[in-house]
Image 1 (cartoon, helix red, strand yellow):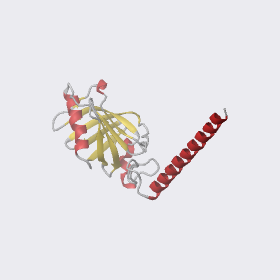
Image 2 (image 1 turned 90 degrees about the horizontal axis):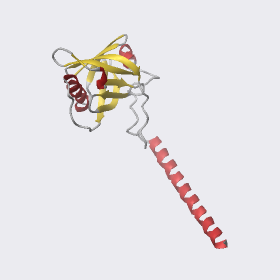
Image 3 (image 1 turned 90 degrees about the vertical axis):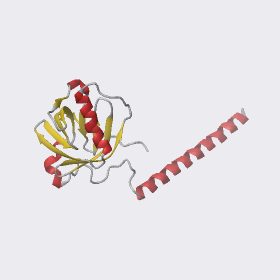
Length: 189
């Protein structure tokens, strides 16, 4: 029994020492990160913020904080209606995350409000693959791929009430305000 108690006590001390070492390492890593550049997951200061939108873009921030259902897409021709069940939408969170969802993949990345609308940075895209069966879905895929394939895309935005028109890279997206945007969660470190 005495040996079992001694072994348990030694094991407890070893676990305590390991926990202390782990905690010290975490504190050291965190304090080192605080004194260096922000982590890649942190949006740059010029990204839209609920606290301080850029003054030059104040007229075009009516789209910020909302998810917008894309109801029609045009690309050099007549607008093609997007069926309601296709799940095609644009979302602009107040903390600077842009999400473009089309029938196959979701595209996401940081956005910045500009004097005419917004611009995107590097975009991540899910890799589901495949295609859309209808013309509207195919146009959504092409339009949203253009955000991912052209970092720095500048889009013009016109918001009137609950309607929004976005023009980018030859595409015109007609949208209706749907729901408040989700709050982006910081990525785990």
